[in-house]
Image (cartoon, rainbow, N blue to C red):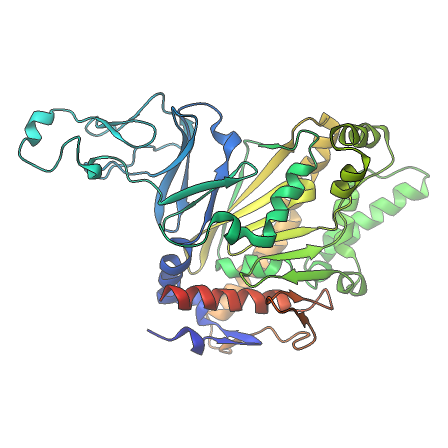
Length: 433
């Protein structure tokens, strides 16, 4: 087993961490099946018996609203012969789970309710008193602002400790609602990325790539936007979503990334999107009424463009977007793209964020397609014999590091993001081993 220290340098990483099956297996064991992993939002399971299936590492799990109204996360496996209890992505199982193979029946919290032909197990360990006859539960389940997480490890830091400063992603999203809550939009885009999960995470706060990778879309949108303005008209806001990608290098370099020791990060940049129209005025008035003018303005003017919860969440809170990674193999990753609706806002305000969801984050957009192509080609390149190391040298040594290990990039295009993430990866892997 190769030591992790041989794969990581302060300014670069070895290509094996993207391509090697053994490294990937160690990641699943030491990271994904130990840390707090996002399961879903409580609004996905509103009623008792509502369930949603997901994957934590290699483990098939099911999130369910119990008879006690609490949310439980269970292994999606009957303890009898191993058949998965829920074959659908989501649904309502009623008051119990019933195995489709031999009709073993369980309460919604996983506790055994009925063993068919129980007399046949007389004298064996298979009985109602044996906890192994109940569905195994995730070791720990917790939530923050309605977002549900589970850890398969009984030990470790609390959810709030794990999230740390990245909690701002969920606070910022919920605080933009006059009711302080969001609800999930049930349509989730799912994309299989033919690349290692790290490509996605490194890309999200990479401020250099947008003007290069997404130039064709950004320039085209800018031209249309200008032509509308030249006619004395106001371009629809969705053109701005796309034209921003054509910002100059200097503009992107002026933003700041904040990188935390656990690999979480924030890309600073105002995304309030407050045009002076009647819909916005109505929305702002509702926020003033709910929170008072001072606090409402604090919420509406937060300087956040993007927040990462390492190693699997990318949250664009001002537009209620969230992408979740589920690693499948060294060169294959499932990306779930979720959208949330602010409770208590008008359909017009909701449509603005829905435009972004479909124009930028859906699998059918040119923006997403550009990224997917680069990550796939990156995977292919790293699987070659071209070079062994991946460079994270840009602005190395020019960042500001505080006593608690937080790194502030003095240039938006600094590869401090990647250096911070690789250091966090190494810590997780070394601690796990």
